[in-house]
Length: 293
Image (cartoon, one colour):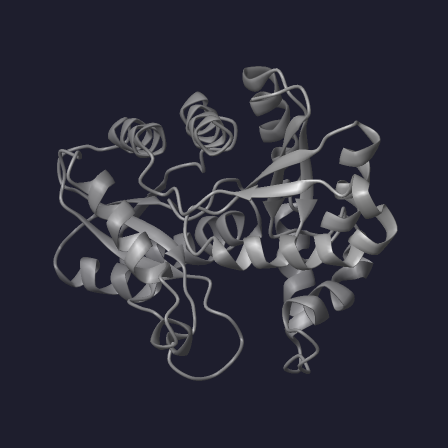
């Protein structure tokens, strides 16, 4: 890395003020009307978990990576604030000329890259020759340090009779049919993790959206029902598709899935997201240095 290089971490985004939820949902849905009750249900979920820690955790990830690289690491949100345009302006004020763009999602990274590129073009007329260049990172869900961090965290929670369930966010199946590599990349990551575990494992999807149609499955609740039917009494659930705790881990797994497991007589042991684990930061450092070499 050179003295004019920096890193832009692009995350999905979340709100700090629950009154911003209607606008946030509108961005997620790209202007499509929200189903009745969706915003109210989302508000309830945020209230139950005491608000999302995602932004604070993302900033902590940026700080940890910055210390490893001895270089500026900035955070931009794809669907909320701080937006990528704002962060690009901040990068220019720091004298940066090249930014390594890392999606804070290990799969389907083109969605984040596209959002960053579109934001860059929106500020280019304003910044003119000072506009930094972007270097994009490809899908990195099989980065060795990332896989190892998951294996070690899961292994600490495995006991005799345990079934491990590796989860990621569900997507509409039409996205996969249209060529999105998300499912294949998740399955490849799960295979890389699972083959190193001393326990039977499988995958599940979670947090299906409000739109109708066919979504990726099996859903985590259905998997728990099947495991109960098979006599499994302990499920270790690891959300390997998420890098930090947020509403879809803290509510969808810790509240909704756990309550479902309790009713089924299954002990649900939830593996924390990696958050600021050294292995995650090592993986982010590796992909950055490789991209900027």
